[in-house]
Length: 218
Image (cartoon, rainbow, N blue to C red; front, side, top):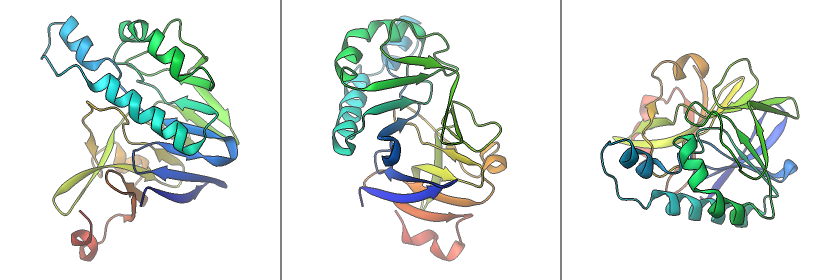
C-alpha cells in the first residue's frame, strides 16, 4: 500500500510509503531530515567518501511526492541540509523545485542558519493547534530529528511514530541512519501508540508490537 490514512489530534493525515507525510486539509507535504549534500559535506571536511548521488536521488523522490499528492505547501522539518554550506550550493536546484510552492524551512541542528533559500525560515510553525518543529518537545507536535526505525521480522524499517502527543517522521534523506524504537528517548516520547512502517509499502502496527505479530511483516 502506497499510503495509510490516520488521525492525530483531530487532523487527518496520510503517511506515504516514502516517509513523507501528506496533510490534505492544508494541501501540505511534510518531510524530515533530508540531509541534502551529505556526501559533499563529508568530502569537504575530510570524512569518508560516499557516492555523490544522494542529493539528486532525494530531490527526485521529493518531486515525485509533491506531484503525486498535489501539495501546494512544502514543510521541511529541519536538517534539510547536512550543513549550511550545503544549502548554499543547492540554491539553484531548489529554486526550480519550489517555484510553484509555498515552502517552510524549519531550522534543525545541522542547518541552523540556511541562507538565500526560497520560502519562510522558522524555528517552528503553528498550524491547526499543532507545533511543527525539528525536535519533539511540549506536544502536541510533529517533528523529525531521531530518524525512527522499527525492527520487525529481523528487518529495520524507517517508521512514523504516532503517540498521544507526538508524531515523529522518519528521515526522508538517502544517506541517513536511524534510532530503533524503543530506545531512549523515543520510548519516552512514544511509549505506546502506533507505528507506520515505510519502504516498499506502508504498514501500520501497534506499539508495543505484540510478539505474536512480529513474524507477519517484513
